[in-house]
Amino acid sequence: MIYNRGGHKDLLGKIEKDNLKLLCSYAQKGYVLLASQYRECDGGEGKDMYGGKDIDDVLNLIPLAKSLDFTIPEKIVMIGYSRGGLMTYLSIKNQAEIKAAAIISGVTDLELLLNERGI
Image 1 (tube, helix red, strand yellow):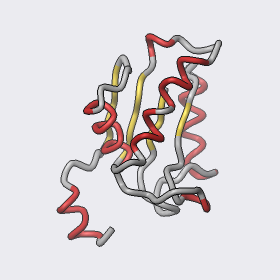
Image 2 (cartoon, helix red, strand yellow):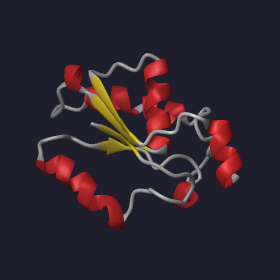
Image 3 (cartoon, helix red, strand yellow):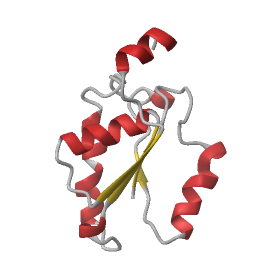
Image 4 (cartoon, one colour):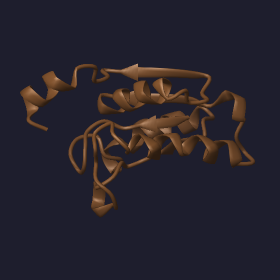
């Protein structure tokens, strides 16, 4: 399972102690979990483009998942929360080789989001 978190940079949804319970619940159900913190998070390299070139970071998790001996390449799935939903939509648009996707509260209107939150 490729997990696409919400938020941007170090704000809201970054992978840390507070949301590990959710991630561990997937692992307890037998999923191998891969995730990206996105660019600029925790001092990471690159620029967080909120659905720009940073989508490549998500898409690059797919060949990584397929290369692992303990995964089933034809059963890769993706889940995205909020901004992670946007990243999941973009992955599908870019013909990501995944079996299924789930999107929870995914961002669909970036102009509205920019106007409301000033991201």
